[in-house]
Image: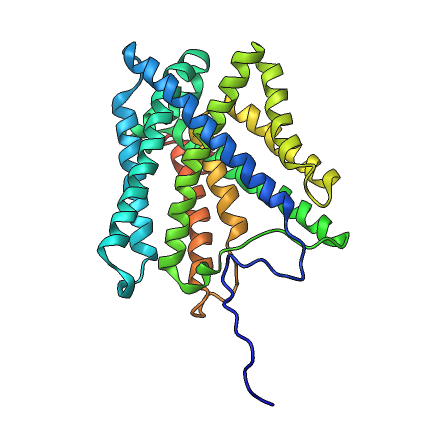
Length: 324
């Protein structure tokens, strides 16, 4: 009779009643939670041992922690609305930023001596970045490698998602609608993904080191590393064959990057892999909702061009070609 008879508050946390619960996503979240808690506990023991023995790049760890703290506060400043700003909200943001910085400090103190002893080449460009040598050709080279591999991962996941949807399975991909609200929210997403890239890259190194300690050989540790993620994340999906194949490719290349490319390229890879597919793109750049997409494209293209320029080390290949 045109009268409201029922009310319900539906938020982002509300599960749809007519859709099955995504058990694969839930098990993945639990797996990452266990891995993170175990990683923090193990890193605490390693960091305590390294500090007792006078090992570790404390200055580099402090710079990394300060960078994470600034990123955390910048995310808060970009996402918060002035109408909701208050002391409790600011205090919570400072606590989160301090916690992010503390995690990275702990992981770096725990891993740096070990990685420097076992895989010294993987820290060359990373230490140069911490020293402020952003224009170093080797730094630019690793950034280019990270961009290339990250975009390649995005293509693999996009193809996997398209195959699943083609077989009649609903897509489980998620996107940030905040990117449609303009440059400021999109910048907050970019900083969030950069922070995640730093944390996950160090977590990968920590996990690989633990596996190597157990199995003694790098090639065997690489196989176990790949199997760990394939078994914990691949078989819970709605289409295990496609997911297992894509995860085998992705984590197999991650092992190669851990041993050959280093920390910096891994950070860039994770940053690009997580950022690009979770942004809702549009080609209508002049519209009010198009500036976020334009910012992401400008970031990727600009980063690639700058890295390519600095990777040349002052050489001018185009001029040499014209001289010929």
